[in-house]
Image 1: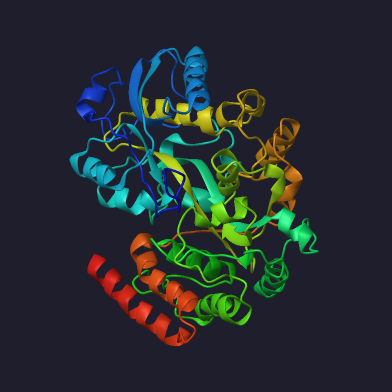
Image 2: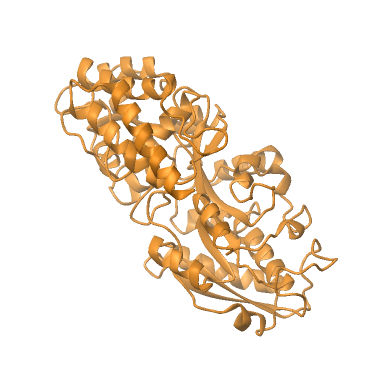
Length: 467
């Protein structure tokens, strides 16, 4: 969950700078003669015939304010068209790629592009609106050669309850522990061995806070839905869950949920390692870390990019370890969905483009030598949806062109933690939980059991109203 157009993991800034192209207009542009409902063509699983002319509309072209990314997009379109000269991609830029109100309006009006951007957490909204086409028959190891290496938990975010696939992943993240290596060294801690349990975090935070001069050992969000988002991440790390198995009730009022709030309470009031200033929201933790005022916090790999590119920090100063607790790590990201009513050829063209741009080693986003030449960071452990041979190839290529100290993220990369997606109706639940997180950080007399019981009651009312 990030804001300001950064990937946020559900809470923040959502998709689609819109193109109002109707399905009829799109199909009339040469999308093929098969059914406009995704088709039942017997050759659905075959790659697109290079002789078939087809036009697709797409959003989330990098804006001109990001010249390197925009040039790469244009170059990739040109390279793609050498393979598929028959495909025309009509794109519009967007920053952010998704705006919640506009996205909802587009789904309601059926005006989203043929190939449209959405967060993983938007899948239910898209399916409820009937906005996406089942592409299961079009995706296989011929059309997406790296398919077997994509993390099933990532693909699962783009499927319905029956296992039908409606999109392809473009990027993702898994939460972990971000820390300031400079402060670790100053506090006498080993910057190559970050803590992996909350007990260890508490002890390390004490040593960092003892440096004085306004330095805090640990920090957390507690406002604008981000307190609830981080509560969820920390709950997952401890093995807890947000919802009951049927999804109708919340399940965070548990031993693990109590432990999340107790950890925060203890660090705030018993250890005095979190400081008096609370009510923090994105990007406060990154700002504090980049100015050497914060030792540790839970975050995602691209936070480090933000701290360097926007806040003028140094890659050498930051490290990343696995999600504390290690039971699971909150997983987020975005994909490209295919508009309901797209023709078979439009779907094939869209699959071919997403595969070329986002899912092929050495091409598109994985052209690390180009990224290095263009001044973009190489070595941040994100996206992280590959395993197997694809992951090995990605690690090798990334190391060869790295512009950041990849060894700083070795504790995170070498300790695989299963990914777990955000709960349905995440933002509504996060809003409720903000109050509980804020209370334990601002009220020394906070009653953790009551806070969770009250949050449970309120959240169940929210879920009931949505069912």
